[in-house]
Image (tube, rainbow, N blue to C red; front, side, top):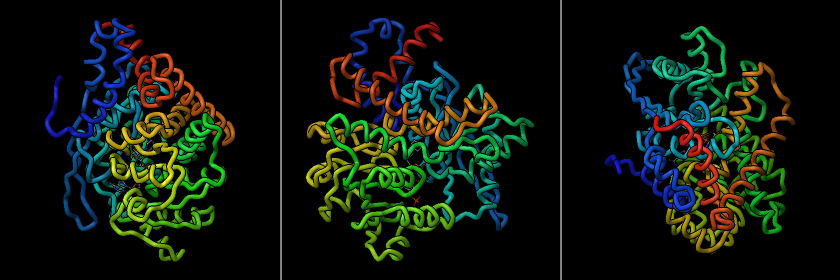
Length: 440
Ligand code: NDP
């Protein structure tokens, strides 16, 4: 009803979700009567703020800060912080909206939110990153808290940034508490949190493959991105016997037909996390090709590269219809989204029309926030669980999410449709809680 001009990504996400929720309106007239559908698309509040900071040369810069607290019907607002020059209110609202359903799917008590800034971390020194994070937290700190809103990392916000953000929150509030997740182990982080989104995406894909009697063994797998999610998806695919043939960053795509094995993955992690280098340096080292300025999906289409499984792990709308068609032409039978909304609606239609296995981001990449939920539990208990314990819980959660997608899809007459299943299963729990509260 209320459309804000220019909020393209937000409208895309809302349209995609509402279209799939039609069967819930038929089955639950009480949701319609209580205005749940109108209320769920409006954030509880959206905070916009100025972030002034000073670079190493003494020059003043001003960036925009955002925190969209979307829905806290089932738990405190929860969702990552993104630092990327493309960040705007539409992107943060789309991510916050998706997060509501994703967090509900995890079965843990977390509401949905998202935040970020149009700050570009590329080319900045550690001191500049620190000063920016402190300036960002100076305002954000008044809106968050362990029982109110618990941010985490996302694109451009990794362990280094979480350290600076948490250190400054602690200083301002004089309290050591579970207000952020993705913390390092020494100050309240959880084992497996860095790995969780990538591992979880692969666990989810494995569950989907199993419904057709298939697995990762000897499969050719295309991954996009080379950040947090991509790195650990690659690690897990290797462990499960698959062969990874691609990685990318915002400057280009590397194809390595011999496979990105464990040694090469270690090099990639060091290159991206320590030296903050480009994937083209990987191509130089291993004498493979780098296609400058191209996405993985463009390269697969243009070079006719055969792939069995695709794991998009970079950013939104990276796969368009023609590249989805090329994936299928080249043998792809399964797409599991490590990134949020990496496939355009037209690409999703191509997957569905061709009957391939398709795990949408809000289900397939929910392992990250689920493990953040486990980090919150450990912080509340003031305990740390072992690596095995957290990984076991992550695997169980991904299996359960997969099953609840299938169950919800079947219960609402759309058997095997993971998009319908994820949206409906995530929605119904939040809607029931909102119904219980009355109109607030
Ligand atoms: P990182 O910043 O660690 O990595 C992002 C990767 O994607 C980098 O390789 C980056 O390239 C590339 N990339 C980013 N934007 C673009 C763009 N516009 N065009 C081409 N390449 C791009 O982020 P994450 O790995 O954490 O996040 C990746 C995706 O996964 C996002 O959609 C995020 O929302 C989603 N996600 C992340 C979770 C997490 O736990 N981290 C949880 C759930 C979802 P470059 O190196 O050049 O910057």
